[in-house]
Image (tube, rainbow, N blue to C red; front, side, top):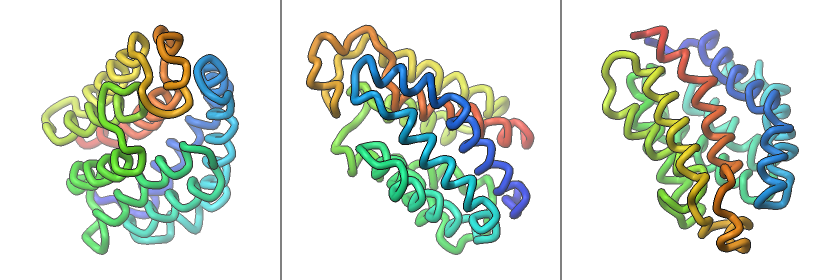
Length: 205
């Protein structure tokens, strides 16, 4: 399925709007084990993406993804800005000047996830956004029918899996055992992005 400007605009808008709509939830999650500003910061970054939506959608997909990443880096702040920036900038670089097609999304997401892991010096099972992004990457790579639904399931399971984990990265790691029993806010915001974007994959299966 080609990613034309209209599809791209709809995808970016859906992702940003979903995070904005859940900002209070993300803030509450972060108040439990972090600085309490994840929802506020993500709302600010995604609102900036929405403000730039027409300009972003007019770019080739690779450049558009990099523009999303830069907007998040500049506006989100904290740890999440560079991490989400790395995700989208890495995806944009992977697309490069290749034809804009959903078929390239798997390799692009893999590149973006690698960027997050490198930036955060982290991997799976450390109570971070990677606990959602890595299983979603793997599910996307596997392909097959009902792909959108399987991505949502992978994201939901990945996010839920962070609840019993002890955090070893970021502000939550300072809490030690007290971080156990809480959903990681970064994992939840990543899940929200997957929930917003997966219907566009449903449309081609």
